[in-house]
Image 1 (cartoon, rainbow, N blue to C red):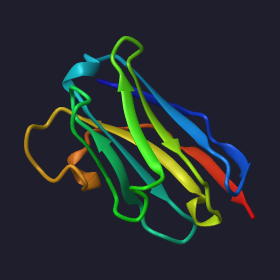
Image 2: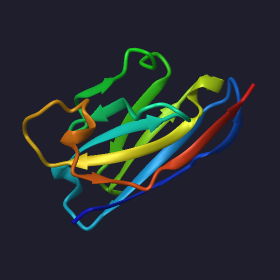
Image 3: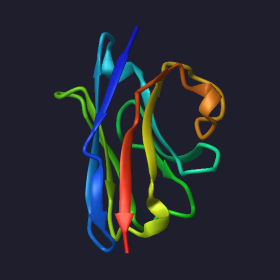
Length: 125
């Protein structure tokens, strides 16, 4: 069983940057693909980014690829999502997720076995 705890959210002004953290415990971090999703008010949860077990391969949603950077630190058992040039439309609850699966669509939330509780990001204009 893996426990994921997100942190780093808050109220920020548009144009600023923010880094979200996802600390993992209870499992072998290097065996998990880590994903980030977000859910804006009144909308469905959507894929944002993911990073491979080694950290070499990453993927981000087309809508955010120029501003979002995903990374991981195996020594700290932590995944990160850096959000640059924040926009009001980035306002959402951000979730990290983990999966040990070796097949499936890693941009699809059902592929992920473990989820954090989410961290709220609110961007003011």
